[in-house]
Image 1 (cartoon, rainbow, N blue to C red):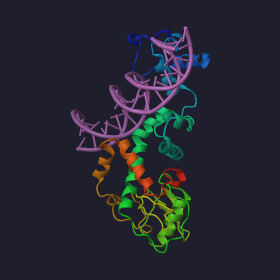
Image 2: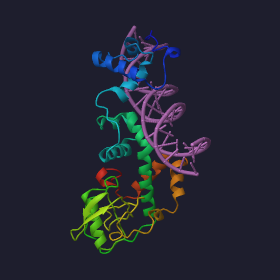
Image 3: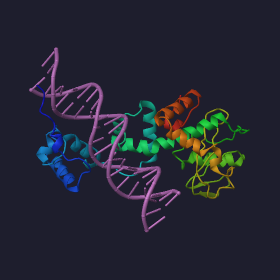
Image 4: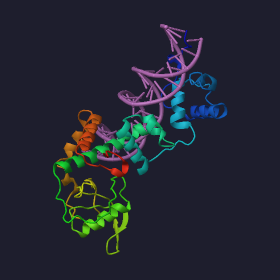
Amino acid sequence: MGRAPCCDKANVKKGPWSPEEDAKLKEYIDKNGTGGNWIALPHKVGLRRCGKSCRLRWLNYLRPNIKHGEFSDDEDRIICTLFSTIGSRWSIIAAQLPGRTDNDIKNYWNTKLKKKLINMANNHHRQLLHPLPIPSPNPPFSQQYYSPFHAQTPPLCDAYTNRNNNNNNVLAFDQGSCSSSDGSQISHQSFAFQGYEDNHHQNLFFNDVGTSASSSNYGCFNDNPQDYYSSIEEIKELITINDASDNLSFLMDEIKTEDKVWCNDLNVFSD
DNA sequence: AAAGTTAGCAACCGCCATTTC
DNA sequence: GGAAATGGCGGTTGCTAACTT
């Protein structure tokens, strides 16, 4: 025969945990450990909770060194990189992000990061359909790749300045400041950029929505950043209709098959 | 100011591989 | 060897706070 039933479903409490329950569980595990048996734990602790619920509460909230709050750019990059490689294996992705739980990452992906990525992929999609003029001569900007997650990196500033000097149809605003070629400091509030590749298909810049604060001298900002989209509704539709994940996969595949390198510094979609 | 809508997140559900007896 | 529980995981739900109309 097998083991005894894990818990009396009719008598266990469900819903949000109270501070008292948290304190009980934490105190017990701090003193005694989990004992390797979550199902037996609630009885020992004196909680009317299912063992699975205790396990989840401990792993996702109570255990030491849990990190809460905003995800960093580095964490974004790791999540995107791994998701593009292994898909929704949240526990594996979480293992690469100390202090983050699979549940946290899953929630973050579903509520924020996926939308961000879809938006970027969609912008790229448009850019491929309607390529901008390739500048000539090709400006001597940094060979490093520009990452949309990384709006404040020096490569962005280099690209910004050099391309501006060549009066190209590109712009990039970042929060903070960077140096222009004449040595002056440029400050910006936000970033927005129109995307295109260089002649060698080695550098790819992105469209993205954003607002320009004070950069008219430096970019060729074409009026309203939303003009880069044929329709905002189209973007909403892209995200909401059908299965957003399938849609994202489609876009990812499309980008891959374009034989282009996307976000190479993230190792996302690189050949 | 109130009602309606949306976004974020904690927690639950259910499936499946593993473990136990 | 097989039945049944456990542990672990990804998907989903439901509550609540924030935002919009």
